[in-house]
Every structure is written in structure tokens, then in C-alpha cells.
Length: 430
Image 1 (tube, rainbow, N blue to C red):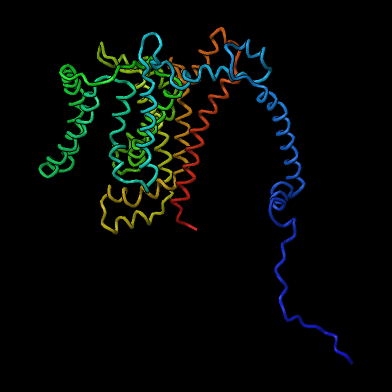
Image 2: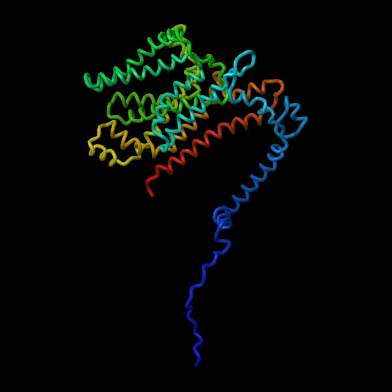
């Protein structure tokens, strides 16, 4: 009988998977139509997207970019009137900063330079592959940026920097002689005395001898995106280290330090930010000597910093609480003192855990800068009201609000993207 059985001696070549099990079709099947409930939600979502696009696209496509008034826009097209953005763009960015009109010189280059240098200053802080020596510029930038924005003689910022140099010298001289605690106390009191009583008169005297500086710009001229960035960046940079100290203070075993930290955090978190801004605008002057001219933007920065630091402290405390007890014991086993243990072992891990909360607090702080319009500062949102008060643009709403929202979204989205990048970079677990 003939044997007709067959045993394959060669492997078949690989074949492509079925069309429904790969690529976009598979993704759609698994994520959009994986069940009856998911299918209903997908169809409802698609319907909502279609309705929004059907209503908004004609308005966006049939828009006007060049016109002198809202009425002229309406005569040219029935869609969006972006001409108001085209005409008032410098005002939305720079506020009322001197622009060369009315006989004044155009000083807006200072704002542009200040924020370009800001990017250079924060780069070595955000990205570790850049040269570490750039951190020195990051330390000097706050004084340089202040001088560029507000102007005046160069001697004011130099005297402010001199206060930190005095603190360093006092600590280095007194630490070997009188001990660390005494050296720290004196190095704190020394620059305070310098700034309050000596720096101002000396800067004035040097300004009379060598008046090197820029045209002074009062805070009333600040506005627009430049004002929001000034307050937001200053608040972020100052509230973070203060929040770290408050978080450590709340975790401290020293009764006085813990009590003061807890009291401060709970009080600030129980008070709305708008209340603190009113305090900065109105009440703070009552506690200052008569005739004292305390810049309104500086007062707002202080209050925003104090407010954000309380929330930052709780976010960081959450990161500290999430660390296993073994990390603290490991630091003790290595013989590290309190500050070295926190700097080298505890705080890096706690901050890594708290990155989402920290960035969320930063984003909230930056968006809260719009509240300064309540006390008369012309942030982008307040400027929209001023623009709409103009007879030529009375009645325009959506275009201005959409543009302001887009400006804030660019910065907040960038912060969230950097947060995700940092989380991936610091990820050690699998």
C-alpha cells in the first residue's frame, strides 16, 4: 500500500498578522470600541467634537486680521476679529512699558533681554548636561533682571549682592572662632543691617559720583505678559526653597520650630490669596515707617511667595512621608549629620516623589497671577478690560480671552512637559 503521509521539511515564511490585529485598526478596536459602553461614549464624543468644529471652524476661518475697529471687522467678515490682537499685541505683552511714544525712549528691549537672559539662567538648573559654571550666572541673574526691568543705577543691585558677600565672609570668619550657631546668626543679621541702613545711602553716593544706569521705569508702567512672568517666575523661584525649609520645620523634633512651621502653614492655607494681595496693596504700608515707598510689585511678589510656600511645604512633606524609614536609618548609619543627610539622601528622593505636586503648585501659582488685576495691576486679563473699554473695540470678547488663554497655556503646558521629562529621567524603579 502506497504511503501518502507527508512531513514538512522546511519552515513556512513569516506572514503578516491579520489586519485587525495590528496598527491603527487594533488601537481603535481596543480603545474606542472594546465594548458596548465604550462604543456609546466614543460615538457621543465624536458627536461633540463634530458639533464644536462645525460651530467654531467657520468662525475661525472667516476671520479678519487687519482692521481699525470692531465695526470695520464686522463689515469685512463675519468670523473672528483677530485685528484687535494684531493692533494691541505689544500692549498685551509689555503693558505700558515705555515704547517711544510721547517723546519717551523705547525701553522694551530691556524686557526682551531680561527674559532671554532668564532662559539662560534657568537652563543649567533644569538641564544637568550644561556646564555647571553657568550656575554662577543663575545666581547673579535675579539682580541683573531686576536692574534691567526697573532701571536706576547699577549700584543698587551691586549693593544687594554685597550683602550676600558680607554674609559669606562673616560665616567663614566666625565659624572657627565662635561656632556654627553664632556664625549663622551673625551672618543673617549682618546683611540685614547692611541692606536696611548702609546699602541705600552708599548706592546713592556712588550714583552721584558715577551715575551708571538705565532709565527708571515705575511699577505702574508694568503690565501684560511681562508682569505675569515677573510675578510668576519670582514667586516660583522664591517659594520653592522656603517651602523646603517649612517642610523640614514641620518634620522637626524641635518644638518651637515645628510649632512655628505648622502655625504658618495652616494660617496661610486658611486665607485666600486675594486677601493677602489686599494686605500687600493697602495694609502693608501702615506697618512701614512714614514716607516709605515700598514697590507694589515687590509687595505682591512677597505675598505670592509666602502663599505658595505654604502649599509647597505640604507637597514636599508628602514626599518626605512617602520615604521608607530605612532611608533615614541608612543616613544615620553612614554617620551623616542632619543637613548632609537631607541634602544627599532624604531630600533628593522626596523631591523626586513630589515632582507632580510641585509642578502642579507652580502651574497654579502662575495662573493665580491674574488675581493682581483686583488690586489695580494690569496683567493680561486686566488689559482685556482696558482694551474693550476703547470705543473702537467695545464689544469684543472671545478673541481677547482666547489669546490670553493661549499665552498661559503655552507656559503651563511647557511646565507639565518638563515635569514628565524629569520624571522619566529620574525613574529608577521598574
